[in-house]
Length: 135
Image (cartoon, rainbow, N blue to C red; front, side):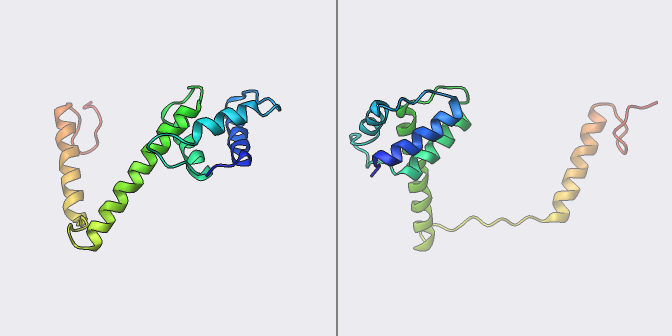
């Protein structure tokens, strides 16, 4: 469960990233604490989850002014991804599914890549060996 100090740390990170004013009165802290905790159908997020949600917000919504609802939405997404990964791992452990095997035949891959490169050069009217325009 988030504490008042956790909210202060989170708001400090938010402030540093978007230059917002965080009043010393603590009203903003109280608002964020109330919004981030006690969300229906959701366990209260931890500070680590909120920080991860902050990072995700900056990655997928650059320039968008962060609000507590963004944190909640991103915590839900991150939890969903973690739960999916756990379900897959559990299914692999009980052998309900098999882990995908990656069998890269390097020689075949290089041959196919070379053939595709030559074909593309020919299609573009370039020299198949050098990739340069004919003189």
